[in-house]
Amino acid sequence: MNTSQKQKERVVAQASTESDHEQEHTSGSEIDVADVASPSTSTHKKKKKKKSKVSKVLSALRGNTEIPQEFVDQVLDKVKADGAVGSGEANQENVREALEQLKIMDVVKGKAGIGGINKKDMGEHKFWATQPVPQPGEGPPLEDGYIEPSRPREEVRQEPYPLPKDFEWSTLDIEDPKQNKEVYDLLSLNYVEDDDASFRFQYSAEFLQWALKPPGYHKEWHVGVRVSSNKKLVAFISGVPLNLRVRGLLFPAAEINYLCVHKKLRSKRLAPVLIKEVTRQVHLKGTFQAIYTAGVVIPTPVSVCRYHHRLMNIPKLVDIKFCYVPRNMTLARMIRVNKVPNTFATRGLRQMEDRDVLQVADLFTRFMKRFDMAPVFDVDEVKHQFMSGIGTGAVGDGGPGRRVGQVTWTYVVEDPETNKITDFFSFYSLPSTVIHNSKFPILEAAYLFYYGSDTAFLEGAEESGALRRRLEAVVGDALVVANEAKFDVFNALTLMDNVSILQDLKFGLGDGILNFYLYNWRTAPLAGMNSEGGVAAGKGVGVVML
Image 1 (tube, one colour):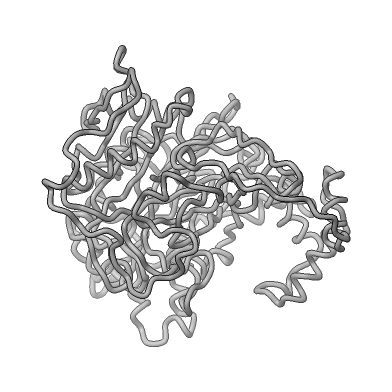
Image 2: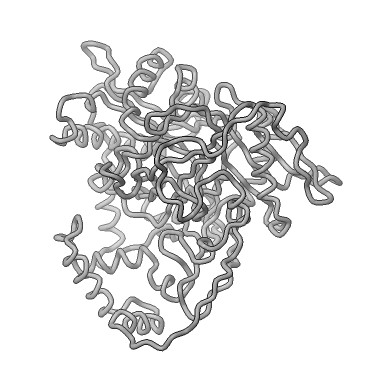
């Protein structure tokens, strides 16, 4: 269920534009949930219409390799007319740069879609029409709650779902180094990659141990498919238990992730069977709700977030084409503008230790109540999320700023007078393979995880900007730590309080979209990249999916 892109790098789902002839969807990254989406069967009759001004501009665009000045001027006029945030600073250069980042020429020529939403993804979804998820056109629910009631264990299907001939089910033991490596190999060669086949996530054995073994995890929720003849692992999906609060209601759920099918077996339609089987296993444990994410649009997102990127190792990022030098800038100036400070802004900042767990758990619990959808962690879960991935040995043993096998970095701010933990931040490492690049084979990417600050509970902290300034300082220090550990880029989504701080911390708009989904649960849309129902952007989502 989580095909995500979590869109973690510059990933954009392949799309078709509304041109006269739809492009064939042949992306090599067509995996996970995208495999269960049926193509649209709708047809459109052509009608002769007088071309509008916009149509004429689009027609002119299709014949160019660069964005015409006329198009830039029209966009600039529209931005200023709308009076959008930041429109006063808009000019021809930054409008052109934004259009280039959106790959607008590819969109116009039918090679890509803005935000990962495309015509075929929005078509029929025969599999999802059979599942207890909100369906298109239903509208917001009158009240929050389940779609299908829970069932006793004896009423849950007891036998595994049938697989195509020559395949068999396998329960993966992530603690077994051999089986852990099998999952790593499958994901490393077949999991999410961008449409240009330039980047592919590279989950380490340590990452899988951290992500798939939270307190109370069930081995049965780590579901694999093997070739019967040689036992080769060719597909995988996972679930881990999570107590989830959506608005005022708390319920046990499964966080579904890492749905992956070997590239050569995409035609076998294994993805729907994997989803049904992990759902069956989850039901057998008495859990009937789930949360998952996807880069593509399926029925029906409860929220949509967008990735932003803080560039750090500029020369490398330009070399591997993660980003480009804008027209109005040189490489040297781009490096200078994005230089990360080498000193902390927050007094009392230090690495989290075991003795901090109780205080961090308390701060986390209080801070996360501010968001409409958030996990509820007990003390053991807090310790696991923030401490179990810190690696072994001393800092530096695994490279500059790193321990051996380090996956997570968590820092706290301790008041030197009261010894109270007033703030904390965390981030995790998820590198990507840079495909076909021998000079730089690995993109070192850090992802903002959870954070919290007592400043949030001061009267008027949000209205006065005090919380925003404090979080800028705290998350800014996370950038310092990541830079010292030689990360190339630092990524963050438009969730929690991120929206208010990303621009000032020099995060750039990414083209990765992440859709959040709830299985067997209805609720009104949650504020992600946009505000919803009077809730500010980001404040609806407090769940960071790995």
